[in-house]
Length: 223
Image (cartoon, rainbow, N blue to C red; front, side):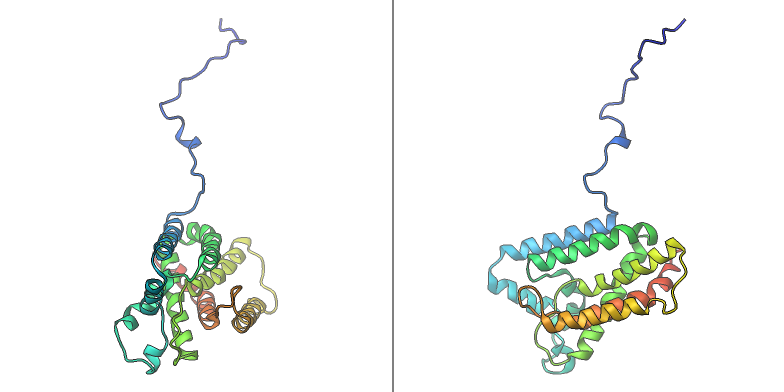
């Protein structure tokens, strides 16, 4: 008869149980690699000289004057609406946007799937560009950063949380949150950033409103 007081150890495969080997930071793939891409680009820009860094800002940022006629149309006008998203002015700017990306992407990507998340970010980025140029067409100051696209993810996260909770919307729906965000964006645009830099509040609003408007249509894609 077996002895109930004897403990039998079962050999484990080399390397341990895969279930026990969890990554230090668990993030969905697209969110993680997008954050690493932003970090890598900023490290490279931090390593070059200041004139080179400002040259990158001027040629790969979004300069509204190219579209308003104040500057002759040139190649930066073609790539700027996309490349400006990946450039950040300083570490504070990068860290704030990366925290937003991780906070919203970690919840949205498993819910939406990476394709829908990436497409929604692209649409919000486009809206941010359009609104920024429409409000400030003569500006020669380049706009940089992923804040417009990430503002759209904030709006999508609000809708996702409401959908997952199943709670009924109040009398005014999402309008109180929209008014608060728009008001805060304008206020920060007037006050400026922590280091005195200007904030592209128009881009923030454009991305945020687009996130609200297009989250549910995008969710119907790639069923």
